[in-house]
Figure 1 (cartoon, helix red, strand yellow):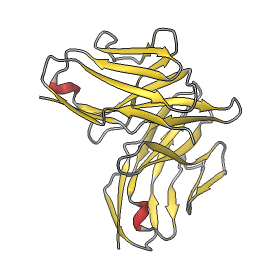
Figure 2 (cartoon, rainbow over the protein chains, first blue to last red):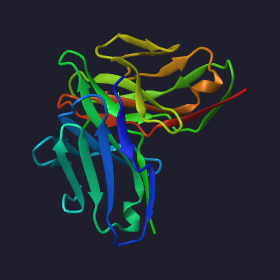
Figure 3 (cartoon, each protein chain N blue to C red):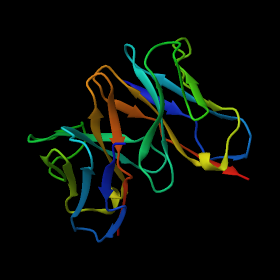
Figure 4 (tube, rainbow over the protein chains, first blue to last red):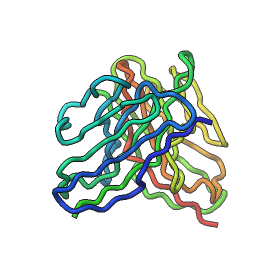
Length: 117
Length: 111
């Protein structure tokens, strides 16, 4: 079945550094990918929707200059957390839209746990 | 706005026990409802779904019925197994095609 690969699974970084998270659709083309964030004991929250070849659409309250999303190909989207701070520590997960027009499905990556020291 | 409220965990059950994880929602219009499961070290996977009122989604022994009158989509399984240990997320897809997730419920099944 369709698989979405997300890397890295976990990352620890120093405050002020940037972290890049990759999300790849391995056996299908994903014109649309989604990035979510989950803080402890809270819901998965949609951060942004990225469409291949165009600028991402960010949800209200998400800083687009801090969370850079690039969707340069039909199989790869990246999220870069720039100048990370401890409050950015969270679980980030991507998903890709696949399937058919009549049976659309979302396929999720395994998530990235980011810890900023 | 649309939202999902899910029973908090963690939940610990003995093998063959009955499982219920409560989920209620708030939405305008007629959302589709989903249960996703995340096994350790893996991505979220669709477990089951229901797209209209009174529909029952089922998969791997799990069931959930779309109850419009109580705005609920509770997940049930009659006899859990150790392999069911995972985190379960209730979700809805609203009118704008956007997904809203619950907080997730961690289930541990002990032999």
